[in-house]
Image (cartoon, rainbow, N blue to C red; front, side, top):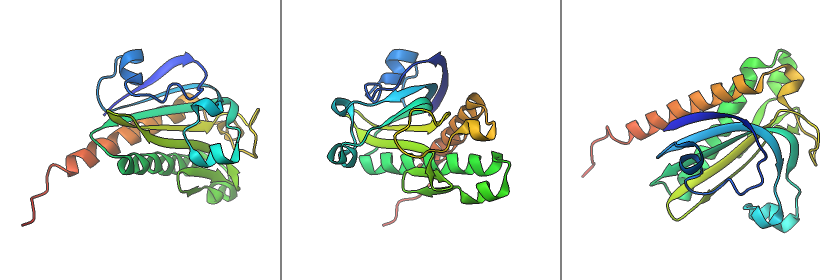
Length: 189
């Protein structure tokens, strides 16, 4: 598993959730996770979540931190597990960095989403391509331009790049050790 913070600001519109995005755009071949900062607005044409499509839910934010993970040789079930791992790790980092104890205590993961004081902190989706499993996970840097009540990194003075680097590192280590764990078990007859 390779990781990279992309030092450019650009929008996430759903078209980045495609196989080989990290390789073709940024040179990361194989299992990877990339992150960058930028706005978000996903049209219904590029929306993957069936629930959001049925409800015609708007997904947007003026400033978010985006992560795209791509894993090869893993079915969608594994992608959803990786998605929830990203959410759990993001919640852990928040609990370590939010200064106010009462706010820290309110951080919770519900499925693939993270909430702070019942306000949505993240968005996420997992899907498959013919060659890989893909995850988009994003957290709010700002609460501006969101269609629902949200929580954001700027509320607690958490630098987006520092948060991204920490989440990239933790997720990469987990994915590497998960893969290693599959290689050290003996077959049961």
